[in-house]
Image (tube, rainbow over all chains, first blue to last red; front, side, top):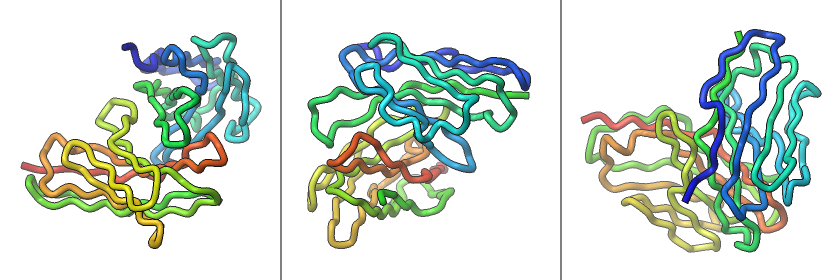
Length: 116
Length: 112
């Protein structure tokens, strides 16, 4: 079975440029999460969706960040304009409903973003 | 609120040494507890979990017991291998929500 698929794996861009990260969750999973990982702050939840609807975006750091989930198999995280402090690894994770609160999260391999 | 506190790293051990990584938690509801492992350049993957008090999760020689009285879920392995070198994250999810709360991670390096 295919896992959570993220692209690109690595992105290097210059300050001020728009960045779009993409995620394909595991088929049948109706929860999708975006996390950011940095050395200083560890893993931070940015936003999560249920059935393509954003449920909690309180972790989105600023208006420069936006996330969409137009259908059950695709989500994007966009940063516009990007800044050097956005440099981090961005993870997408998904899980199915109906497994109780013991159900695990399944993570993608991450997108490493470097903003120069 | 809900939070997880892990022991500070990095941890460096010799092969075949005993490993303990401490994890304590606070939770507003009844939590399920998890250990995730992140190998270099990869995403997090579930190592083990426990969903109720006194449950023991185990996998690949690792174990952790859900201790409600001490609000702890310490990770242990009797004999570590070089291949266990990774970052380990303790996490919880409460029965009243969908969020997972992660600790800051503990980096483990095992030297031959």
